[in-house]
Picture 1 (cartoon, rainbow, N blue to C red):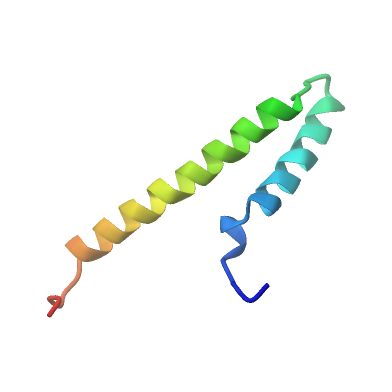
Picture 2 (cartoon, rainbow, N blue to C red; picture 1 turned 135 degrees about the vertical axis):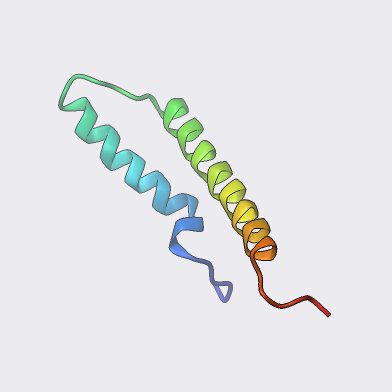
Length: 68
């Protein structure tokens, strides 16, 4: 694997964090099935994409220099 990406862009990282959270919730009697976990990971990834786009627009709007 030569491609690199930020840790927060990894579905594996989010999947593991959600699995750990799901395990913790299960000890309190709240259960998430695999399909629900996958939907949550997908929503997180979509949220990161939207946040990245919003940050790009904000950066351009507040930039002090013009693009040539």
